[in-house]
Structures are given as C-alpha cells and as structure tokens.
Amino acid sequence: MNNNEKQLLHLVFGGELEDLGSVRFRDLDDLDIVGIYPNYASAYAAWKARAQKTVDNAHMRYFIVHMHKLLSPEEDA
Image (spheres, helix red, strand yellow):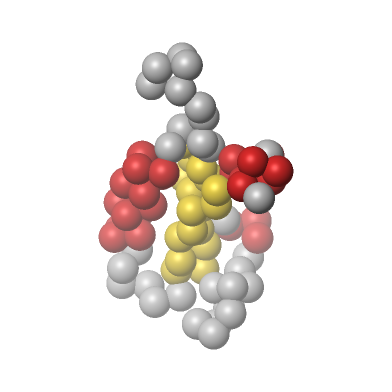
C-alpha cells in the first residue's frame, strides 16, 4: 500500500448466531475477530476464506464492518 493512499479500514469478524432470523450472537466471548484490513478487497478475501471454513455450521456468520465510515462519517455524507 502506498503511504499516500487513504486507509479504508475494514474489520472482519464472526460468530455463531442464536437463530437464523437475527444478528444476535450466541456467545459474545466466543466471537472470532479475524482481523483489520486496509481495504475492502483484502477484507473480502479474509471474510470469504473464513466463511468457507465454517460452511457446515448454518448458524455461523462472518461480517465485514466498514470501520472507515465509523471513524470519519462526515466523509461519507
């Protein structure tokens, strides 16, 4: 990554949901924090790899959080 490029941080995490109709985790202490990535493409690759490893558990879900939107919401307005 070029030092002049804007950092668009993304968090990838997941966990087992209580039920398939909501985003409520069964155990917050057991969340899987995959990592923080400098752009969406690398976050997506990490998300896809981790999600594919848990494909046999229908309650397991992974998410990408656009941290840059939380850190600088005025830029996305």
